[in-house]
Image (cartoon, rainbow, N blue to C red; front, side, top):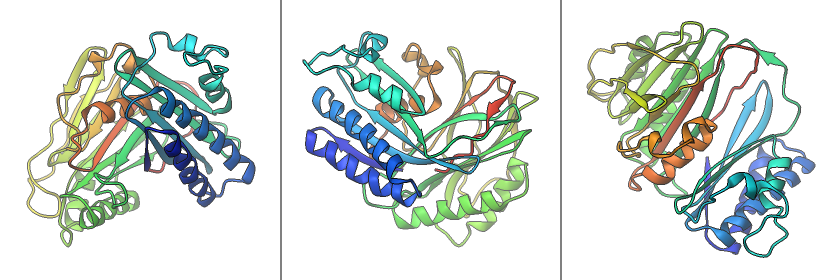
Length: 343
């Protein structure tokens, strides 16, 4: 995931210049690259004109062999009292034609936003470079994530990954000790071992990662298995990884064991929890403070998981460590589009 701070118009141009080669490396056509560049330019310019402490985040997506990108635009104010009105063409607070947000919505494959007056706005856009495949088996998850290094330009010591089948989804969040290159090496190895594993048991996977990280500086990590039919999530965590199931105003904390994968750790143990349809699962590294509550943001829990992850990152990141926020919603039964996302 890439990040550009956008607080003046020149940085809006920097955001566009970063997005173009990123999309080219993903194999986008010139037409698709041009469309993404327009989205970035429009949204980043709006950030520079109207917002405070703006940021642009960019990550790659993959769904059934089709490549895409997710664009996140976040700021700390002034926010919108009526987002629906702001999406209508012709509405403007600065004398412009007032087509910005409406154009973003029309030209994106998927679009969502959350805004509060005085607190700021998060806008999420997805753009796919091709036609998405047909329906996949029910039970697949909606996934949103922010995964960023403490300092721009250095490797991120955190990582996340997902493996999904018709019956089960497996998720990994890993935080290499410290930050920088050595932390990134530990997390990348954990990610590779997780993706290569054929096991579907979180404790078994965690034990394998513990053995595989012994030559690294070690990591805190968690593996989760979501049973689509049974509506449960099985969790196994070692170290300082936070995890909660959020259902309405209720939040249930998931238990991680003390230790460090690759060094000293308790024997891996699994804990199972009910996971109601439509509720959120939030898993994060210790780059996020633990005082967050989605209930403090009316309506946020109903937004796309990417928007939820971006709001939590914006308002609760420590700023002195790498930060990962993984947000997952369990979809209701029924045909859904298969989604396999690459961090």
